[in-house]
Structure formats: C-alpha cells, structure tokens
Length: 468
Image (tube, rainbow, N blue to C red):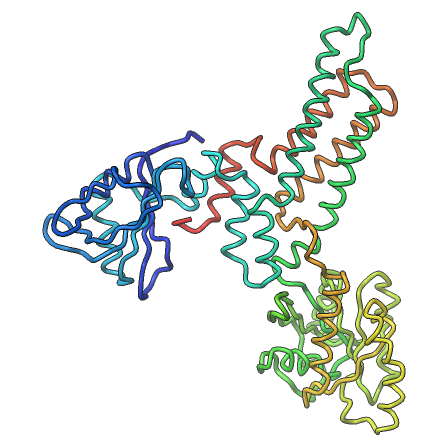
C-alpha cells in the first residue's frame, strides 16, 4: 500500500448532537489549507508559521458566511499522531455545523478519510508497529478495566518489543547461517550452535507463554464466558436475573422453560463476565428440548467457569456427573433455594463450605449456599468471582495475547522454531535449516508489521472507525 500524503478529513467524535465536535485532518498541506478558511479578528491566520502543538481561537469562514467559532490545534510533522502535518478543529456539536465545515474542506483540497486511515498512516510513517495499531481499535472498543488494560499494554509496546528483540537475534543467527552457505566447500561454521540452541529455547518459551495466554486474553477482551447449568427448575434463570438485577430471563415453575441459551454481560471489579443461562439438564423425549440440552453442553465446553446449580430440596437427585465429565473445567457448585432449608441443614452445609473463604483455588470441592429468589448469597458469589481473579485464575498482570491474528502467527512461528530445533538436533545442513529460520522470521514479522502486504492491511484497518 503506497504511502500517500494527500489531505484527508473525518469527524473524530460520534455522530449526533453534542456540546462539541472534533474534526481531524492530516496530510502534507493541511495546515496551509486550513489557513485559507481560518480567521482571527477578520483576518486569515497563517497557521504554517505557528509552532506545533499550539491551540488557536478564531472562526471558520466560507466565502458567504461564518460557519462557527472554533479552536484549531496544530501538529507539525513528524510530531503528530500520523507523523504528518495534522489539524484538529473543535467546534460546536451541531450536525449542521460539522457537515458544513467538512464540506468546506472537501471543496478546497481534502478528501474524506477511509476507515482507520489516520492510524494506517501512523503505521506507515513508523509511529506505531502493526500490533500497536491494532491495539488502538481494541482500546476504543474496550468496555471493562481488563480489556482496557490489555489494549493499553499492547498499544504501548506490549509483547511486540520482546518479539522484535528475539526476531533481531534470530535474524543475526540467520545471517551467519546464510554466510556459511557461501563457504559450503570449506566446511566452516560462523554461527555458534550452542548459543543458537539457547536462543531457540528462549524463543520457544516466550512463544508458548504467549500462545497459552490467548484463551484468557480473548475471554477478557470479549467477556469471560460463565455457563449457568443444572437441572430444570433449580433457579438458573432466577440467578441470571439476580446477577444482572434485571428480568432478563423468563422465570416459571414449569420445567424446561429455557430451551435456548440466554446471554448478558456484567462488569465486576473491572472484569467483564458473559453469563449464559442454559437449558435444564434432564432426560427428555422432547425434540426441541434435546437441542437446547445439546447447546448446554456446547456452552459448558466454551465456558471458562461453570456455575453448577443444585436445588436445596433435591440435592441427592441433582447430580448429572458434570464434575466427572469435565474434570479440568473450573466448576463452582451452588446450592440454591436456601430459603427452603432448615437452620440445621444450612449450618451443616456451611461447614462444608468453610474452606471456600480461605482456599479460593479449592472452590470446585466446595458448595456455595444462596437464594437467588431473595438475592441472598449473591454478594458472596460476586466476591468469589473477584477472589478467582485475584488468585491468578483470571490474572491480567502478565502480557496477554487477545488478537486472533497474533495468535495464529505465533502458532506458525512456534511450529517453525520447533522445526529449526529439530534440524539443529539432527545436524541438518545449513541450507535446509535456513528455510525454517526464514519461515519463523516471516511469522514473527507478521505480528509487528515488519512483514506485511496490502491485503493484510486492508483487512485490519477496514474494521476501524472512520476518523481514527
């Protein structure tokens, strides 16, 4: 994709009426173009002579009339978001005013920006690498503290800085191995194989760590899926409504009311959880209900946490082998309808439940007692979710991969590095080993944009909002 310096313009604030609106411009000549229509005390203001990172008050004026009083921010290349000369116009948030200003600039030498073109120019001008540019879109879309934290981490360099260092080290070894090919007849070695082996181990460990983080990163970005499961009429829909503090799901005493999954999101202490109310588990001949139960198991497979509800009055009859069927799944057993239990029964269950408070990692073996109908115990459930986050099960302090494109590139790079390691172990010839090294370098470069093409850039930036 050729780097262009033509002048572009777009609305940076959302469509609709507001106190202010911001219009962005970028390009080689935007400062001079803006000077043609920006007036201070009835005189055109020559913005080309002002310093960068300065703010100027005046009016935007067409040949016929004043459109609005505005503040114009001036950013001069290369010290701007795009790396080009840039202008930001802050005006009143009237749709009419915004469109009039944009139309005026379209008439005097600018064009409408395409989706993500400002950030694309920032990438092409070396202000951001590709993974940082993608993090800009994630930052705009972030709806929780956790997703914001991941996006900020990646936008400020994240794992790309580590990958660049390792890629450069690998590139240095690749150069030495390529050099050996020129002296194949002399049978000389320029690349120290022991040092190379250590580097491959280091790269493999980092790639494995990043790959393993994707499941959590994707969940934190899109909401951690939590499946609410159990037999019919154990209170799954009531629990969903209690958590959301809203009548999201239909509640009925008729068994099998919920036949399809119902989802909604809740942000708890900065982490977004996507709660999924599922069809009740039971043996049935109803064809539609069978489909719903099949979807329940599909949602259990996808969930990072399962809330397994049991009816307090039917504890012995509520076991469906969920723990045995999913031994590696994080499952929290919840006894609902505590309002139907006697004080002695509650005291007995509380003894079993006591280690839940001191050993959050052992929650699969414990039982939480609640009454979703009366919303008692809901605060405890929310506290447990927070405990899980703080105990490391949902930890966001380390570098986490949340981008599917990065995940695929990391897996391919990991496979190529494994091939290089195998070749080194079996004393593979330098020319064959160089092929695998080139593949690993290619896939690592795909992440940061050191290796790219027009189609890839088009796919990435097409998902951006116009004006960013």
